[in-house]
Image 1 (cartoon, rainbow, N blue to C red):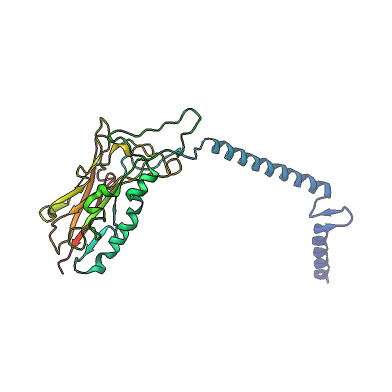
Image 2 (cartoon, rainbow, N blue to C red; image 1 turned 90 degrees about the vertical axis):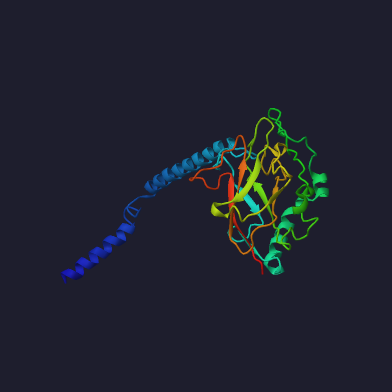
Amino acid sequence: MANKDELQKGSSGWREFIWNPRTHEFLGRTASSWGLVLSFYLVFYVFLAGMFVFTMYVMLLTLDDFTPTIQERLVTPGLMIRPKGEQLDLSFSPVNTESWIDYVQNLDAFLEPYNDNYQAQTNDDCVPDQFFIQEDSGEVRNHPKRSCQFNRTVLEECSGLQDRSYGYQSGQPCVLIKLNRVIGMLPGKEGLSPYISCGAKREDGDKIGQLVYFPPNAAFNLMYYPYYGKKAQVNYTQPLVAVKFVNVTVNQDLAVECVVVSNTLTPGGERDKFAGRVSFKLRVSGQ
């Protein structure tokens, strides 16, 4: 019987804690007490939200829509090739069209914006061997900034205009090289443009054969720099260098490395293997 009374008292105690009709308390607090608590948290969270909005507003004032405040890129930009292939592996047989047709289509699509007529419509015929600097006038933005023409015909035998297969059908493949974009970079001084030098790695030096560059000086002319960013320089055309492998040894895996040579850019060491360089494998099969 005592256990039954204790259970009734316990049940009654919980009901009174949730709602006490005598004191008009809900969960142990009166309406005025709950009002004070809720008012405190309302003011507290409104203050936190205001602080967050104010902080974001101040941070946004420091940002530039056209130039990133922080650039976490290497001091020396990397190089990239076209066509890329799988894991920078270019393997094909001249007699097997299916083995190289994807490379040709990749180059056709990549070079379409470089057609001479399109370049003449959208970009300027700039003065070579000097930086194309376009400064703002105080708070007045010089936007959109102009860009210099890079005509596809400059690539000559590797343009895809004279040879629609870019040399892959004849076993003399062309590889296009570009220097990754870095806003504001001036990759040269004293009128000397950075240029590309390619060669075989390790013991493959006698197997790589003759290399021909287009343009012949293998240079990224200074007039294409500085780069001002995608928003500020909407029609920017990245300069290219093409290297043609004239007589590589067939049926051999050749480890090729191309580096940028500049009087302001230093190729990376062992810790930055991709700074200022690119490595890829080339294999031309005889059958």
